[in-house]
Length: 193
Ligand SMILES: [Zn+2]
Image 1 (tube, protein in one colour):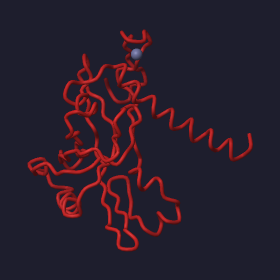
Image 2 (cartoon, protein in one colour):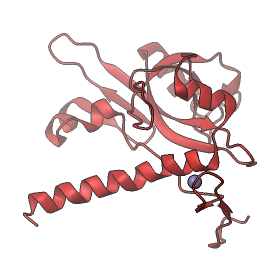
Image 3 (cartoon, rainbow, N blue to C red):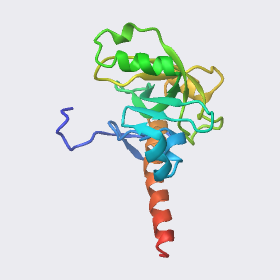
Image 4 (cartoon, rainbow, N blue to C red):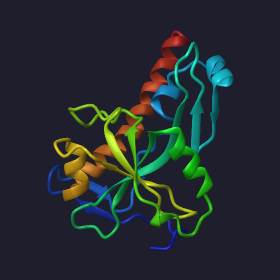
């Protein structure tokens, strides 16, 4: 389907009977949770951040922390194109420096995978995803690193290995809207509405 097309193909779901878009908006975490949790004042003082990389300066002897934005690829059963969750991994300083060094490198996918920890809470999983061990695979100068769950007994590991249903992908997308509703509700409460 060309990118300019507004028409979205839909698939009737076998689980809930509702149509799910075949090519849907994906769940994206804009920042690592430990950074999103900080006040804007602290963030301005201690963070160097953009949409690709974040560094958080430790205070009172605490270590600095480094984050890289990647995607969690999930094959979707019966679909050619998989689902991707946009998420962040915390990595060691040496790996952070290496990622920056290789940023525009055409051959970066040959780099051995790095280890990291997932830096976002994805509420659809019973076991926490925050701090889940992942491997970070560089993919290319114009594509984000792939984050692969490294703990075999975690449901995210199983979903990456075995694929998810279109229904499950739609549940992930549902978290996008849920986040928006939470924000709106908090704003209305603050305004006394
Ligand atoms: Zn469904």
